[in-house]
Image (tube, rainbow, N blue to C red; front, top):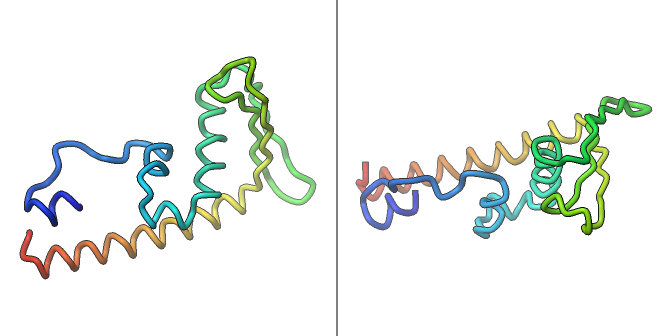
Length: 118
């Protein structure tokens, strides 16, 4: 929406097309949730791309969890990382991120209305 507010026109493409790209922009809505979004990015990339991922699905002692074994850029020389993330934690943290994101969108929408850039 920055392009719309500053130039009066909608952008021709999306600035953010992945968690990774969003984290590199330094936007406060992402920065406030950086630890969670970094883990989410690593775990989802492991499940999408990693050739060492063995379709691990672990039920934790107390709750359902998602597990992932990652190698940075799928390089065997990279140090492997293991994640075991409680699904309840993912849901709670994602809800917090979405709440902040929707608040940010409402603020931008208000600025668009005030500036007359509709």
